[in-house]
Image (cartoon, rainbow, N blue to C red):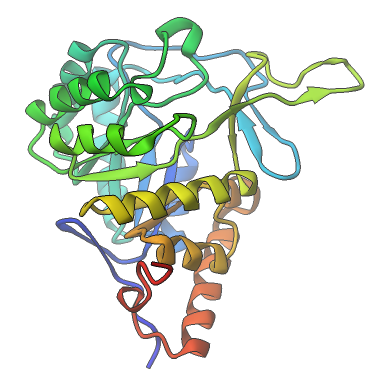
Length: 304
C-alpha cells in the first residue's frame, strides 16, 4: 500500500503536506497548483497598494535565496477579485488558497482582514514578521509579544476562518511570542519567516539587492526553522506549518519529525518549478515506503 500523504492542518484537510509558501508567485501560481501541493499561500496583501522595492529584489546566492520584494501588492480591496479567481482555479486541483496579510498598524490588521474576508478563505496567514521593510514600518510586530498579540486579535476579530501567525526567527525567546498570539486567537503557527541578511557582489562592490539587506531563505535557513518547530511543538498544542529550506523529501520528513503538521517550501519551486515540487513528494513517498511508514501521523514529532 502506498503511503497516505493527506494531511490534517487544524480543521482543514489538505491533499498533500506541502504548502507553497508566500512569495510573489503571480501567474505561475495556477501552474504550480498542478504540482501536488496541498495549499498555496499568495504574496501578502496590505491595506494600500505598494510598489515594493525596485529590482533586483530576489537573488539566488547558491546556498539559498535572499529577497527584498518589499511587500509589493495591489492593496486588499483590489486583491479580492484576483484571490477569488485563484481560489476557483486552485480548487480544480484540490489545492487550498491561503491568503497572507500584513499591515503597518494593529488597527489595519483588522481592516485588511475584514476586506479579504470577502474571499471566504479557508486559511489566513497573518504575517507579523517581514524583515525587509523595517525602515518603513519600524520593528516587526513578531519581535514583541504584546504587539504581536494585539495584531493577531485584530485579525481574529474580523475573520471567521482559521488563522496562522507567521513568526520571525530573529528573536531571543520565541515561546512567549508564540504563546501570546495563540492566546490572542491564532489557530496555528507558521515558522519561520526569512532571516535578515545581506549578500555583496565583490565585482561591483555593492549589495546585490536594491534594498541592500533582505530576507534569507533556502537551505541555510532550515536548521533554524527545524529548531523553531521543535521548540513550539514541545511547548504548545497548536498545528505548525514548518517553513524554511525544504529542498528534498528528506528535508520535509525532518520537518515533520520536529513536529510540523504541514511543510512550506518556496526556494525549490523558484529554482525548479513543478518538477522540483514533484521530486520532493516522490522522495517523501520513497522514504516512507522504504521505512514502512503508512502516514505522516506515525512520524510527526518523532524526534521528541
